[in-house]
Structures are given as C-alpha cells and as structure tokens.
Length: 123
Image 1: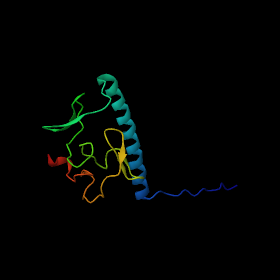
Image 2: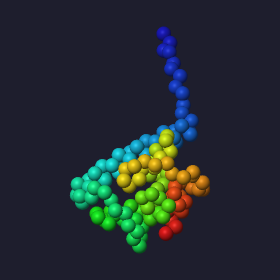
Image 3: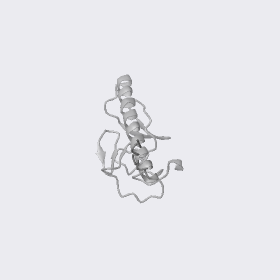
Image 4: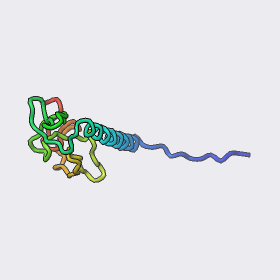
C-alpha cells in the first residue's frame, strides 16, 4: 500500500521574515511589560516624568533611561520600528502606555526615529 503523500506548502522568504518580526515584536512587548512592572514594584514610579539629560531622556522620578530625547515625539522619547510597534494598525507604544499613529514613515532605515527621523548613532 502506498502512503498518501501530503503536500506541504513552503513559506516564502517574505512570509518567514514577517512571521519572525511579529514574533520578535510580541516577545519584546511582553518583556518590556514585565520589566516595567518590575521597575514599578521596585521604584514605585507609576507615571514617568521624562526630562532631557545630557545623554538622552530619563524619568525624573525613578531615573529610568528611555534612550534618546526627541523634540517631535509626544513623550519626548525616540521610537523605532524595532521597538514595540503595532504594524497591523501602524501604532507606536508610548511611555505612558498609549498607542498613537506616528507621522508617515519617510526615512531610509529602520534605525531612524519615527518622529524626528534621526538614526540611533547620531548623538
């Protein structure tokens, strides 16, 4: 008796890349959620007060570092496609937990801030 051979569709490279980006974004989002939860338990910071420092954006209450300062971002922190980014709805997760739609992406690289357009290496 011949066994029936099942045809398995191979995923294209684009589909594989898309899948792993979604998987990485989900894992990063969960990691950041639990990291922030732990930070809040340790530091007691419920609402971050972002201030500009010599090296970027920092919470004035718990002294947590949020990366580069951004004059154009609503929370004054640079955001990138590599961070928790809801690609399906095109929204960015702000420090406050609010999701907003960034301006149209017109920059040449995924390493550029979605709001000010400057790359991570610039400062």
